[in-house]
Image: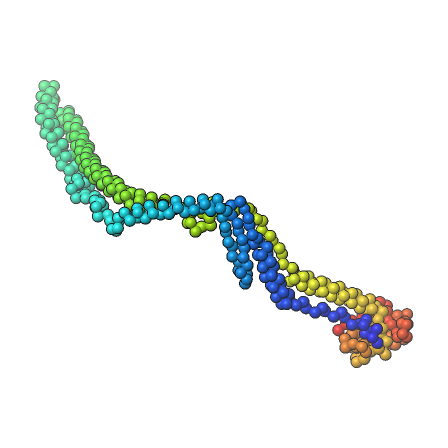
Length: 389
């Protein structure tokens, strides 16, 4: 039965790749690669200016020793001497700096707010109204005082003219003439009243303009004085700061050279540009991943082939009752074939299908024997499918 068992045995899945072990191995490889790369990128360097030697101290520690050529070492010594002189001068300047705290006591006080108490007052609207009314009344009274004699003389002249013309006093014509005269006199008085209003308003506006103009001038003049005081104070403050900053700037300039402990000063520069070497660690983890993917791919291929094999055998599978066990009746097909649930003698897998001995009695053309003498059924001629449960 081993041949038959092999046919119906599905492919076994591959063992899972050891990703944890691969990761550890990859980490170790990365560390070792970094060490090798570090050693490769620490060569001794020899240039016309200096020599750089690398000493391995162990535990991934290295020491770099720089040595200038004799002529550049002489220049470095000169630079150190010059810098020492600069530092001595800076020290003397530093000792002469004022030791007291910087103070603004010598400066004039900061100007305060503008004092407007002595400025011209701007009249209120109520005061301007009273002033306009007084001007209107005075203007009107003066004008009426000049018109009253004229009005009296006009009435005398009109009365004389009417009497000389034979128009008696109290007649209609007489009364009409005096009515016209009084209407003209009223019109003149109304004109005087309008002129007095305009005169009062004009004088009130002029008074407001003079007051606001004077106050604006006073504010502008006071602001100019305050601004001038602030400019004077700023100039004095700038002078004080300059007195402090000049010696500090000199000291900063004198001490601004590179430290003599810097590699060779400004002349100790290597003349060689050694390119860095880069190496990659072995792709252990990536190879493990690729191996796992390949195993999964092969398992998928084998599973697909097994499925195809089972599908092919499903159309002509051994349905001999002698090769089956645990047979249970399930149902009946439309053509009257009995459908059973069963297992093959070599496998616990359950299937549903027919018994070849029964099919041979009903449809002999669908039954044939294999080389071992077992009955096979061509399910393509039946209305029943063999199915895996």
